[in-house]
Length: 174
Image (tube, rainbow, N blue to C red; front, side):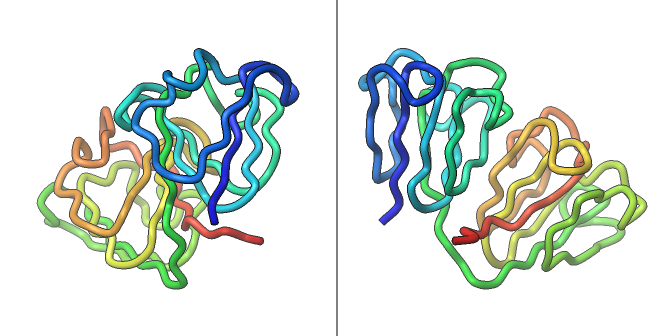
């Protein structure tokens, strides 16, 4: 069973809250989050309620302060479990509405511009598995959870622009 524990203070101190399911509003349980322990499963955290704002992907491990999960602040106000799947496949398109050059991906890609010679991806179709899209190469920058489905424009995945630097499959390594 997936489980994540949120702590108000750094280094797993202060008031804590154990969570085992999606939660659209964590503000009920704590006012700030400065450390997290993920006991099982993969999770996406959101800086605002109802799965809005900056997203942060976490897998099993200990995160003694928000900088360890690439957080911009101590604000974590909603979370979502990412379901485990065995296979992963997505299609990237250079233009919106699945137009232009199409490339297929079944494994992690640390540098989309280098592999596909594209600096911008305007649409995606996730066929299998869940993925995390990063705006910069080497899994850095803003993160976006991609679940199976259609993303006809970059706005559909929550992007401010079409910049895609890297993509990582959501896999629980333990």
